[in-house]
Length: 267
Figure 1 (cartoon, helix red, strand yellow):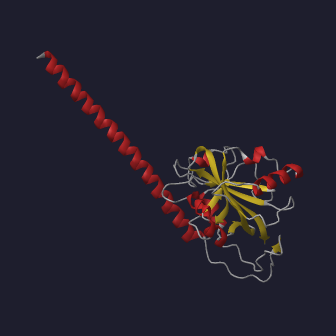
Figure 2 (spheres, rainbow, N blue to C red):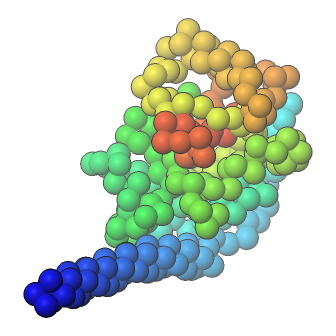
Figure 3 (cartoon, rainbow, N blue to C red):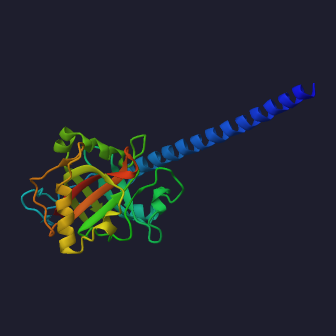
C-alpha cells in the first residue's frame, strides 16, 4: 500500500515537472518567434518610412573606382538617415543585395562589438540580431577591407539569403551589392562566395599592410571547395577596397559563409 502511494507520488511529481518543463520550452519558443516577428515588422516599417525611390542627379557624377565596371549614373541618397538616427544612433548605413531579401540598416556599437549579435536595431534583446560591423572598421567604408556580419536565420531573414550564392547560376546573374551612407552611395561587384573557417578576418589578415593584403587576395582566388564560386578573371589589387558579408554555415559553429565584393562606383 505504501509502495503504491510512493509510486503515485513519484508519477505525480514527474507529471508536474514535465508540465512545467514543457510550458517553459513553449514560452521560450513563443518568445523567440515573437522576437523574430517583431524584428521583421520593424524592418518592413523602416523600409516603408525611410527608404524612398532615388532620382537621377546630374550635378554629382559618380567617382568611377573601376571604370570598366562602373555604372554611369548618380542617385540621391535614397535613405532618410535622420529618421534612422532617431531610431538608433548606431545606424550608419543601409545594405541591399539585389536578388535576395537582404535590405537592412547597418549598425556598429561604439562600446561592444558583440552587442548586435543578440540585439535588434531597436537595441532590445532579439535572437535575429542585426547587420553589424566591428570597431576595427571605419564607418565611411574607406578601409581596404570592411566586414559586415549577420545571422543565418532559419526563416530566411538577415544574412540567410547569402547562401543563394552557392548556386553558380545565381552567382553569375546577381553580382551587385549596394551600400548607402548619409553622404555617399557605393556599388560593389561580387567576385567570390565560399565556405570558410571561423577565423577573425580583420585580425588574421591586416589589409593595411600591402603584402598581407596581396596575400589575402591571392588566398581568396585559390578557394577550391565544391560550393565555391570565384570570378578568377576579375582583377583586384591592393588599390581596391573590398566588402565581405559573413554569416554562419551549415558545416558547423566553426564555419562561415562569405560573399565578397569589390568597390566599383562611389558617388
